Image (cartoon, rainbow, N blue to C red):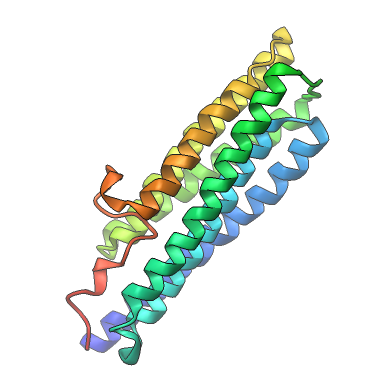
Length: 222
């Protein structure tokens, strides 16, 4: 009975993890396309943030898989830690690159082409993130999974970032005032913070980050 319960729990986490990955990757692809078409650094930056979340979701799946394999019990933490550090370095490089691009755009502004369809897609992106955050939070509480709960909190933060990007797009569309470079810098600092938290987990205000070692199985190893 205990084995069946554990398997059911893992299936829920796998399903939520795959959904987390799929939605973030789709959002990243759509926003990158829209960002390139509109020449919007803020939208591209938001897309990169979604892409990073999609990558972190892969570790949710890997973590759960390894937690259910006996022979990997002693190595799971090391594998996750090494993978986390590699991803963190990539995240930090992306954050620094965004900062550089944003500063260059402030020094030499480029024309942005925001349209009504762009606004609609950004709104759809925000709604998708809200629904995903609520779903992850619900499943995390139901299965007592801190991994899913933390992922839900992270997605909710992403939604707030997307709202800021939407606000900058609307401001430009109505008043032709371009503040997206400053929005991009703000997002890049969040990305850099995420990267540093992956390397130094104690910096995080969350009890558990999606890329930290999964404590949900510490008490249920065979």
